[in-house]
Image 1 (cartoon, rainbow, N blue to C red):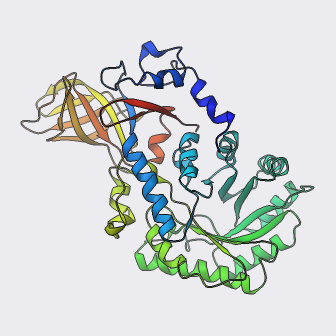
Image 2 (cartoon, helix red, strand yellow):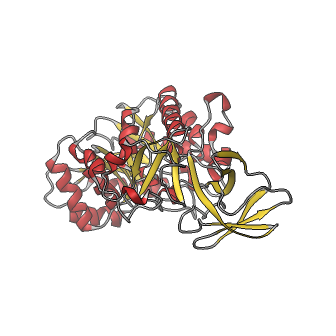
Image 3 (tube, rainbow, N blue to C red):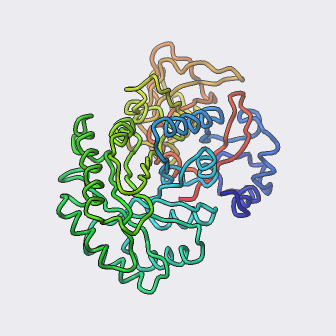
Length: 421
């Protein structure tokens, strides 16, 4: 997907929009600043500043590429996690089929940077967005977009908005993860009705089935597997009924970041169908992993022989107040750190170029611009120290920062990751 558009990232000027960057870098292009190879701790960076580990990012990209290949899966990582075209490009270079996205705006970002395969994991009923998608399909024969349908009414709205389109829009019927789950069709009979509605249009083409096992109510391994077997069975029933006559391959897609091992095993049992099957995995949080929610839930905990993801985020903040022996405050809060699933975790304290574990230091709360630290007796922390915080939930970490330094283990900043939320 390398393009002139991607090269624009390096020519953007550094200014007040980008938190944490050296004030004396204002006016430089991002490419010029990256070429200086500044040190995070001695190069003028200000706190708070979110960083990504260059080595851990590469490890995670390589690991999931290998995992998908080993299990015969195509991979369309969910781009809503990062909304970072540089990372989209690296994922595609690492063998990804394309990028999964959630809403039309995200597709516009991906298209601006040359992504040619998009799995849109939502039903789109916005007429303006559908007409834009149709124009993109008409203008670029190599562009492919597949999106959900989950209602007859939705199909009718899509058909009306796409009237006159020269290329049909590929769609997959979304099977809900259960009663009371999020979106999707609740029963196989209703799925057939939605598929029939698609067949009555000339603007949509049914190419498969999909869903999200992460929404299975009270999820356990067996409940997730049972739902995945329903999804595979739905694909087989649709194929037997001749519903995929207009496509060259059948798409069967699932897979968030908590159950992709179950997806891999159940998709391995997809029966032989009338056409080749594109088994599409969509996990997205693996890029940065995290120090909380996904550290606990990652399938690699269940299959350690397959490898292990590494948390790549560190939010560096500075101690600005030490009012008592039991308490300290750093200058990063809700505006800077993900906090929807878990509070940040104090990992490292840095003083005078020396790092040590943040023993006896616990984040207990966040204000808008401060993290509250409980300090146990003997905890060595002073005003001015830098503290590295591990974060939980990649999706709500990336979206708080527009330009994120990519840092080697020795502190050298080698690039800057631009996000577009």
